[in-house]
Amino acid sequence: MAVGRGPSLNLRRFSFPLDWVVSNSLPDVSRILKNRFVGFMDLKNMKQVGGIASYLDAGDVVFSDEGCKQKKAHFIQDTYYNVISVHDFPMIPNQDWTHLYPA
Image 1 (cartoon, rainbow, N blue to C red):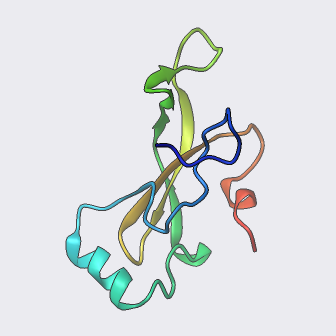
Image 2: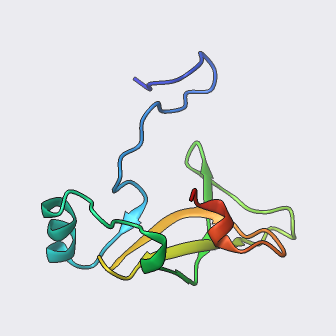
């Protein structure tokens, strides 16, 4: 049963800190938990890494309108904890990715 905000949208109500995060190091993930997320995804420890977005809609890949190609997206690495945020928000021309993060 899907948890949703409305009867037809079926959007989830909650997301957790490690949703959409990739790590190849269990000790680094354990360190995040041990430190209770102190410093996690602090802007000073973040850098952009390459990534391509594949958006899903009901399990089907949705491509951009640009000739059915996938879109480049911001994938951001936390260099302190060695994790990558793959919450693939699309690149906007002439806008730096840091503008998308709250101060």
